[in-house]
Image 1 (tube, rainbow over the protein chains, first blue to last red):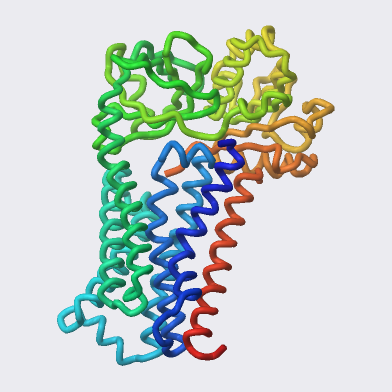
Image 2: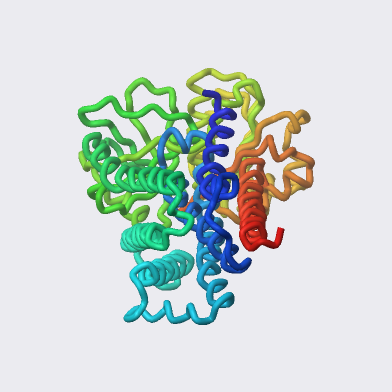
Length: 438
Length: 34
């Protein structure tokens, strides 16, 4: 299936999963209605539960699914829609209480029936889930610990929410509702089992060995890996993978872009990692022979869908890693495409791949433009940040027909996208990917 | 903003709008108002 058709297919499935349960109640014969607020509350509960279960999918990294969407948009989608989901499910009891204040008694866990107890605990679990997710860093919760908390609370909220629905048994008394919700619950459970059990086992069976750890400029390290006892993975330049040096069951993994050519014959995969956090700062201590587990490839940040177009890359710092993978791949393919690379860095000394990029300029039809925040005294190139003026001076004449790839931290991406809008680049010609997603 | 991120924001907005319309419609119908 083509990528566009895949995207459409999954969006149709998405809307069906969210709205089909409530839609079927509306379309088919249904039990007698009750007060307006009570029915609005029930409808919010149905939509909220469908959305809650659906949240297992965007971050599941299911290969056939993530092929259709950029991973960072899936995480963003999950973060934003989860807040709406929580608000919808919180509004469900609040409207019931407004409609009939006597129902406040259901909050008393000692006297309340089991259906209400389950609902109260489910809402509390979601509240803790939202607080620990939105303020994880402020609360100083370690990422791997938080993932267990997140998954445990999500599992609890979904399970208790379903229990509540089946026990209330009003609209759920209809056979089609029982079938739909059991079917949806089966999908969510299967995804959880895949994420927490099947995928780690698959990763354990396909280990990689460190073959090289190379110091790069800008506090970065290139890590080359060779598959052990299996055929490795084929990736597209610009994609990324999750890496862990511990058991895949620990879930202390980090996403990094491939930085080597995707067209190599030796099965080797390679990443360039900047010392930014706990894991990335330990890369320099890795030794040849160490075992690493890799989950990938992922991402739609790929030039392979834009074969016929000229390419313009805009990257900041370590955001150059996927760009380097593309340039190395294009060099291997002896590409004659017109290429432009605007590369922002704090200083000349921190320019990762500086020497190799000069070599690539000779091999490729590449216009390399360094943009330095703090240039050396004798610097005659671009200074400051990649803004509209820098773009006007350096983009090729036909830039409006080219495909743009932006990679860097979110503030850089936003600033560059604003600058591209200033010079009239159409949004459909821009692809961006930010570093951090979780 | 690139097209994929624009579409993502649109789908969140569309989801919320459809959800709210359905929810109110459900309330009106089952509440006997329409």
